[in-house]
Length: 115
Length: 112
Image (tube, one colour):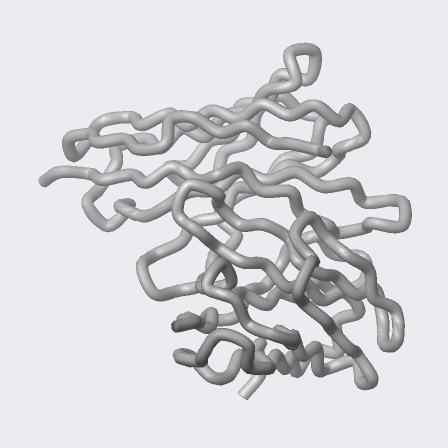
């Protein structure tokens, strides 16, 4: 079974801190690695995504670091704010093949940013 | 309104009853998905569909049935609901050439 392993399950940081969430995958055919953000009572929404041809991608305060040889990727949130408190899911998928678009999700990390 | 909508938002049903969760998207996206979200398990794929009349099982498909006669609709049916199917269900869609999945607001289903 394809898996994406995510850690930690929960994370508490102070405002301004830099929470880091890590994910590891097994299937080397994965070629798309998104992070989704979910607020209570809402569906997940795409936050940022990376492909394996780059090692880092930044969008505002959010950065993905990608290590293809280790099959790991992580999300860093710079200058975290209370409004960033949410559950974060990493995911992986393959673009080509019969299961195009099938996102395999990690189990999620509940982030709390204290004022 | 453009987007992906699920109905109902909340549902309570009894064990053994059949229940259908609805999903409708207005973008004509080819790919549609059903996930269930449970504490400690994250989002698990139930079924997916690459186009109208093309569906395939995901990781946790037992006890569920889907159909897709029209591109925009992807209903999920629990044939005989069990308590273990109590969960929050999310529908999602992805357009051709894209990889961003757009999720609905979810349906919270309780089986008593």
